Image (cartoon, rainbow, N blue to C red; front, side, top):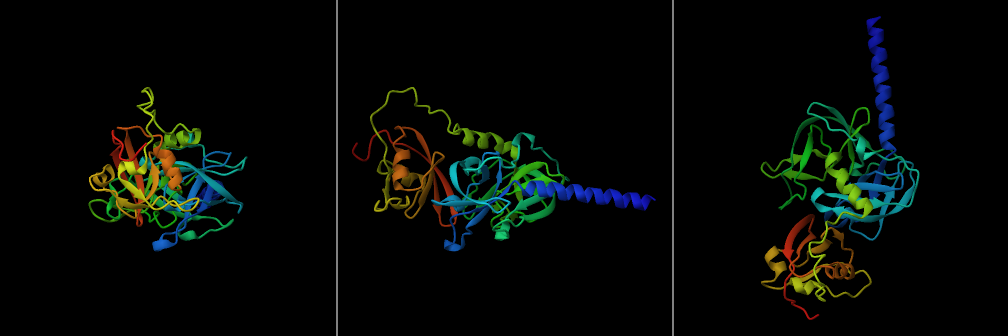
Length: 333
């Protein structure tokens, strides 16, 4: 009789886990975008955070394109718009034109402790392209720690708390997936492939949802950028340009010429910050830069003396630098 009861309990537990897995799968999104060159993968993972089609994912080179495709669990394909990204938290928000979608309620995400059994959902290695289910891995929370990691030669942008997991979950395409408890409660977002800054060993981790809820909501509402400290000052009549920072860009010859740096002027703010020729500008102060013309539009909003964060793509890495807008123009008004 005891054996029968144990078998029945195990069967019920498996059924509950399978049901939870299906529920999570319905909220997952396959993302396809930029990649291919230099061995960069052109796919990633995201998850629905609103029934109106908002998708959270990690910020990566995959989103650095005019066309990002989002594929839902039922195989429906949509063009997704990149609403913005919070570089410090390594999270981006996309939007597709759809309604009534199953989505995670971020306010119901939970914190877990070491020893908790978890599931990791992601489209690592592009296993799924249509209505196929994503990969699910089982693991255990090994520790909760502060991330101190590198991508290539450069420090990873996110430096906050993470869950370290005893399974190899941070694979190509997995970033932006989710980690849940075995009964489907949301725990964290899978981060990008990074190495420990001290040991140079790969880290398998997820960012707690509690760290991402605020940035995702701010990106959704358009309130992400902090209040401009110069908002109360009188306008100067000066519009900043790339040359003011010491940047010479490629000739703007087509409608959407990428914002590649052709030359960095000696002793300029850009030179002192370490920007280099062939860097591709992808963000300025959190605003997505899709072309030279959009970069000029972003720089025109900056005032002399303002601190400005550039995010550039250098080879396979994203590099963040901060420099100060010059008080005196380098280029004519």
